[in-house]
Length: 305
Image (cartoon, rainbow, N blue to C red):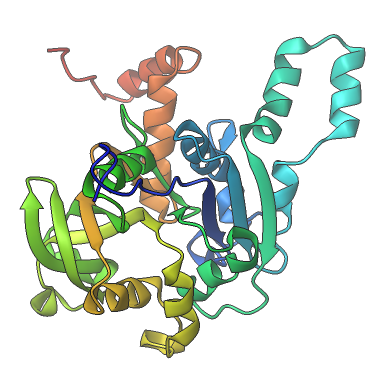
């Protein structure tokens, strides 16, 4: 099966789904009123970076799944007539471009997950808008910097492999297995594994390997039926990894692809701060001043190779 004229064409992925309903308790008290997905990486909200990754990979329709009280996330991608009127009146064209940037990324729609029943349930909430189509799914607080967008790496792998669901992965120390869904499977090539099972947040001694599911997936529409039929798992919640593992057990092709790039878990305070520092250092408008400040504190930039 493939796209080379010798098999059926892989269905294109037009939709993206972004679960963004978490309470963000690790960032209290700021997340009492500000969703963690709207925390800025310098001057750009985390959620905009996630949607930008989907858009850069050609995914033009994005469904945000938010919790009650997090409707401000949808507002971030909508018009701001009051601010726009002021900027127009003052002739501030550069700021106008920045204001409109989130609105122009993609066609963004929002669904409210009324009850916190797990990340798998959050994905299931997008079913009415996505329908019977394959879709990309990225977590709303996970960003990755890479020459090729991480989700584009997953889409490219899906094309190469002839379809099926694809799991984004990284290699981790098994001591940290309890933070991740850990993949068990059979190697296909250096960076690809045929998934046999995914164990959600196992104890280190129970981890099937060192391949951890992170960042996102490309999912075939059959995942919705698997989620709808799934019994609550660990913590009484519906876990996406359980549904993906079920597809693999039942013979549907599920692939794990080791992603290339620098990943930041911005739902974690250290991950968020690291993303901010790296972003500031990498920008021409902030990098020199930040580097000078760090050097005053005794930090020295690595010598260029």
